Length: 245
Image 1 (cartoon, rainbow, N blue to C red):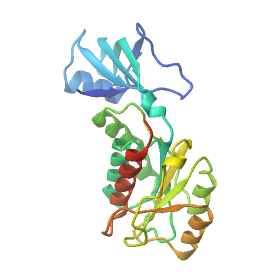
Image 2 (image 1 turned 180 degrees about the vertical axis):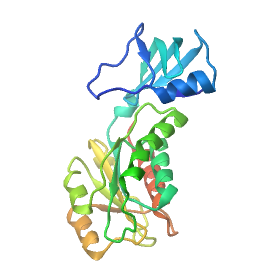
Image 3 (image 1 turned 90 degrees about the horizontal axis):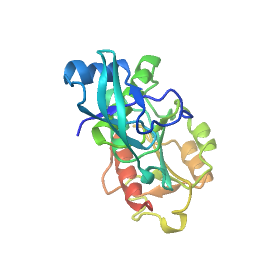
Image 4 (image 1 turned 180 degrees about the horizontal axis):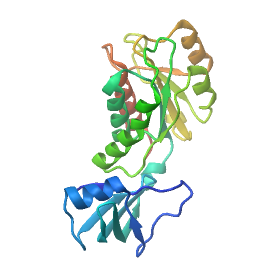
């Protein structure tokens, strides 16, 4: 099934209901009408990034503003089940970071915080950062997921730690540091689980101390040294498998 993204002007906007007519943005309209050559009354499947999957019929429009009449709305309650997942991840070079964002969406993350760690080698410019929301939307459509993760601004570790007091924290352990996953059953009702993944150059002693002071628990991700983006995917897959649906 091919999904299209229905952009919402604000998080407070009322979701569409059956009978409403919505207008897709220029990019989605061009793809629907000019690339796929869909015609009036053809079915259209939409994701609004806020937990809803919508079905509609193409009601008309030009190449820059396709109009879709909503015929069915479903809300995915599992998207808001707790604990929700937050990834705080060291920014890495080039397309590897975009790969990390893509896989994080597929693996069910709800919020992403780009991390500027002391041993990080990347300071993302505005142009590069402007690409990131599009990567998230593309991954949402590819995976058919209903929730678009919140994407924060790049911050340092101290600032990131100040904003994660809503549940337990974990960090990707180096091979051999721990040999088991922390017991998660006792914290399954926490609002959020947050996992910190370090940069290519690893954590500094000061950063390790800050994580320990915050009570972050080491998370075993296997016997081999992982790249940052691989560790992020491994940690999210592990935590997602232990969430209570």
